Length: 180
Image (cartoon, rainbow, N blue to C red):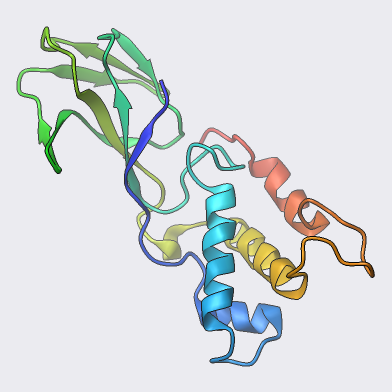
């Protein structure tokens, strides 16, 4: 089951003023460019398709329950705030009577309605706000933003092409897919 993002994370992980310092850019210049790199860096790391295999900032996700499973494996560590819900027009409505029991990386489901069309297990994942996120996650974003700010072209004749900077990769590796 592929999760669906219901509510995207809000706000930047690293403030623009901090990124200006890291990029050695003049304050008030390039704000939009720097923040677009910040969003791209967080997106590269965060969520279901992110390099870290976890959510960084608080966000809501939904797993479809069309086949009425008894057990659902969670796609991220630190999931919380579980509910069984249906998507009704543009809102989410909790399903009465459905029961769930949460384990470390699974949720056991029972008493689901017979019609499972449009039924989802919803949950939240990620730290409540940027002040709670560990520093190493923020440092990866700073390194990626600075690298992309300086190397705006896909390939530069004066430097070797790399997928991501070595310093960022060194910080990502120990965090990648860490449960907890």
